Length: 98
Image (cartoon, rainbow, N blue to C red; front, side, top):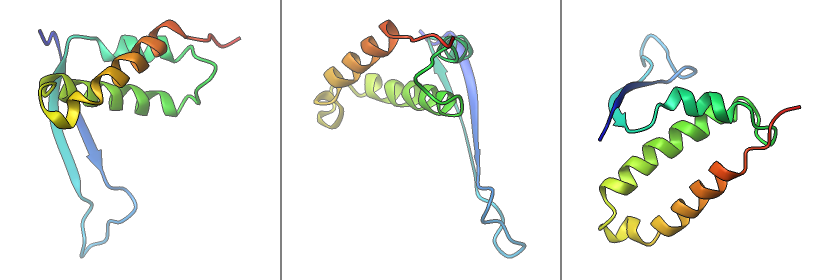
């Protein structure tokens, strides 16, 4: 069940000119987890750069959703055990900042 709903906006920043306006992509997605709680929790990690954490969290949540929605698809089924193992490792190993 998707309890939390989000909107993601991706905007090209450095290629815009009057002749070639910035491209933009926007989409909505739902998730059973509160992404902001996860960001806060992983923000306490000492082994990841602060600017990498939102990229990692958003990437994992988006990819994980597609993977689970398509778990019977051969493209994803071979990768699923590795993804599950990575998520378990990530969740149990949260080195805190000093």
